[in-house]
Each structure stands twice: as structure tokens, then as C-alpha cells.
Image (cartoon, rainbow, N blue to C red):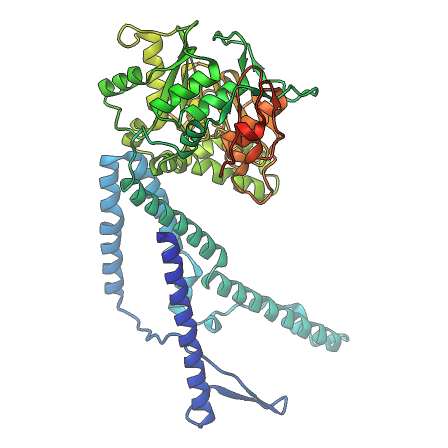
Length: 546
């Protein structure tokens, strides 16, 4: 709402400026018609016709030339108080920021004192800049038999040189005038800064409680949206090779389905009461448990319970030494701020490489360029980063444990932001991570603390990437991925990023395999009705979802 109001405000200001310009122009033309202003009309005597030109004076400036001592005094004061003093202060506080300030200050000095604008400010006009014409021998050779012909050629040469000088002046005028590219980038970064400012204000006014309830999971629980008496048969084609994830997983049941990780990514959004019902319906009564009290006790002891990040530890009855940590995606404004902070540089770099010719040439060094952009991140921001919490939690559970409970392995999962954190923490702890539409970490791997190794990303992390999912294609892909189809409408910008749609796609192609199915797969996403394994019809089992 604030952004919309600001946009309307700027439109009103722009319209008022246009109205003022129109009225001023009519006033100037009226004065000309009354004979009160003779500076807006010129007569072209060569064409023997009168031409009237309306001139609108936007600004009147009185130019004065100060004394040399005043110029030197102002230069010294600005250099000392606006450059040297801040530079010394920054070196005392943060040498990284000081180096960037020194570099940008040098560029600003060059732009201010070593550019054509300063020359024009001293000369006053482009017409006072004299570009010498290159002399030719033909201008002085009048004693030869071909002097007349050469004189004509020389005259043409002089005209060419004058045209060259005019082009140079036009180029200088273009440089010193308004640069549209600079203006566009200024508006772009200004808009980004304004959006971040609004997000910060909204984050402070929003509840960042990790127990934030989600309307979708509540609706599924309330309407009985999980159907155990219906199923999707497995397709006869090869979609998808990773339907069953078996290598490196020791959970009950022995065969872990890809749909299980998508469903657990959904459970991350649920309240403790909802998650218990959902896990019982999906895995069977008592087979999987949400260790909510265990996690909350650990977070209170570590004083991280006020952090907006939300995650759940799911354990299995038959294999209690192995667990899955499911991390919630972007739900609060604090989550979106972390997205911007962590992945804006990598996303912008990808866009620029896609625009410039042969942008792929920069791919090998792109991670270091992204790191250079994020080098100013303060220590407090690093310590409060979301991935720090999940990485530390898993490391503690694998090493010393909590309340006498330790684990042999913990697998990360999550969707969107949750998937991104799963990839980061999985690579840092060398534990397996299965992300659903997670933001990739290959390009930004050097910006995290500790940095991610490329080999760890390619060995321990797996990402499910729906087609046309903009978020899941950011950050640079790792080696282990699964590209899946998306049947969302082409005009749906975020339709392919839905974890529910991904879950339906996986079940539709892989088969539900003794797992319940969702009513919304047919009612909201257009997948075929599942097959019946009981006595009721699909229409009886699924009331219409809105």
C-alpha cells in the first residue's frame, strides 16, 4: 500500500510539472503575439521565409568567477571534512568499508575534477573550445601547376576537419549532459533501496513468531484434504528417475519417496497440532513424530527462540537415530529480507550475464564477484543469518546432542527459502539435503560463513526445480537436480513455485505409492482425479476447495 501511494504521489507531481510547463509555454507564446517578447522569434534571411521558435527558459543562472584563494579554501575544507576525516574513522572501525570508501572517493574525485564539465565551467561555452584544424601542404603550395585543383581539395579537407571538430563538441555535450543510462540505473537502485526500506518497516511491524500459522495447512487439516482411500498409479514412462530416493537414506520405511520430502516441506508451515495430524495421515499413526518440545527447549537454551526462522525435527519410530529437519520457507517479512540480503547480488549477476554478449565467459569467476559485492556484510548480520541456526543445531545434535539425545544423521529439507537454507547447511555439515524449489548456492557459496565447497554442494545437496520457476533457477545450479514439469498457466508468475503443485506433479508421475493424495491436485491444479481404492467417490471425498 505504501509503495502504491508513493507511486501515485510521484505521478501527481509529474502531472503538475507538465501542467506548469504547458502554462509557461502558453504565456511565452502570448507575450510573443502581443509583441512583448522579441527574443523568441528569429528570421532566416537565406530562406526568405519567417520561422517562429518558442523557447522555454527552465532556469536562469548567474555565473560568477570566484577568487583563487576561495577555490583553494573550499577544496581543502571539502577534502579534509568530507574525505580524509571519514576515511580515517572508517579505517579505525572497519577497514573493509574504508577500502571501498577510498575506491569510490577516488572515482568521485575523477568525476568531479577530471571531466569535460569542469573545462566547460571554466570556458563558459562549447563555442569557446578551439579545435585546431590540421594544416595541409596544399594550402601553401600556390606555385605549382595544379594549385587551383589542390586548393579545391584543400577546402573540402578543411570542411571535413570542421565537421570533425563539431562531432567532438557534440560528443562532449553528450557526456556533460544527462546520461539516460545513469538515470535509469539511479532510478533502479533507488527503487530497490525504497522497497528494502518499506520491507524493514513492515518487518518491525509484523509478528516474526516461528509458530506463525499457515492458511493452507490449516485448510488441509480442517477439510480432511489428505485422502488415504485414493491413489495415483505410476506412469509407464521414465519420469522421474528420482521418484524413490534410496542411496544414503536409512529411514523407515526403507524406500524414501521424493514426495515425502515435498510433503515434509509443507509440514514445516504447520502448527504443532496440525503437524501431528498431517504426519499421522501421511506416514501412519505414530510412525513419524514432530519433536516440537525438544526443538523449543534447545532454542530457548541457546537463546535463538526469538529468531523468526522456523524449523521442525521429524523422527521416525523404527529409526530414531536418523531424523529429518524441515525448514519453513518465506512467510514473514524478515524471511523476505534474508532472501534479498543473501541472493540479490547473485540474482543481479545472473541477469546481467544473460543480457551481455558472451556472458557465460564470466561464469568461472562469478562466485568471487558475488563475494566482492557482499564483502561489506557486518559481523552482526553474519551471526544472525538463518543458516547459522540450522547448521549449529545439526552440528550440536550430531556431536554432543541435547538432553542426552544424539543422532547419527540428520537430513535437511524445505521449500523456497527453506530449501535454500537446507542446501547451505547441508553443504556446511556434510549432511544430505533435499530441497524443493530451493534457491541454489553455487554462485553465492563464497559469501557464507564458513564458505561452501563446490564439491560439497555437488555431493550432499539435491534440488527439485520446476520449469518456469524463477526462484529455483537463481543462484547457480549444483550437479544434483531434478527438473520437473509445471502445468501452471503461462501468465502465472509464481504458480510453478508452489510446493503443493510440485507435490501433485511428483505423485501424478511417480504414483502415490501407499501415501495419501491431496484433493487440491485435481480441484486447484487441474490434475486428473485419483483412482479409487475404497467405496466413496472423489466428489464425496473432496468438497470444493476455494
